[in-house]
Image (cartoon, rainbow, N blue to C red; front, side, top):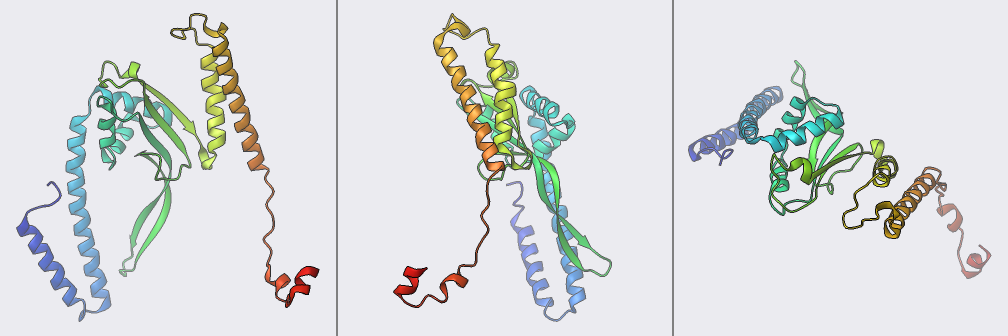
Length: 267
């Protein structure tokens, strides 16, 4: 509804587009390029105007719950809270935040902070247009299943199905980060478990219904399993880093002279 405009406006734009398409057949190439740049500029301005309206509507929705998320992200990723807020309200997956807050909502909310290719449009004075892809650090909301993970992941996890409010978010939502710079996911997970989770678990005093705490055999078995898993991660990472790469061989030079069964037996 916000982006559609009225029928009269759309009809006018369609007529302009058809007229423009017809004119390009007889106009010089340089004139056509200039007009394309003008039309693109107008379209970008309109899209920017619509995006600004959406951003301000989202900004008005921000409450204490959003502020909590923004504060954690700013602390963890070393951005200002204003930068994080601008990024979030500009994200096309902004609705996932609300789905995370609702009763029985999303169990996790993920943010990636990593290099993303940004398209930069260059137009010279001679109207030559080119597009460059430039890597740039970007924070964005993700489901974690569509984008390659090559940087830092900041995650929020729910501990229950209750409605997340400004008063309970610090108790009901856990925050953590995985640093997998350059795609080193095994190393990032190994560090997270060995340096953060295991020390935290081993210093845990309250184990709920298990009154013996760390003295309980089941707790000890659990911690041993986690330790063993981290060791497996470490071994896997080292094996991958020191892997043997076999040289690719052109097989044609070995089989082109094989003509009959005896040649194959000899080979």
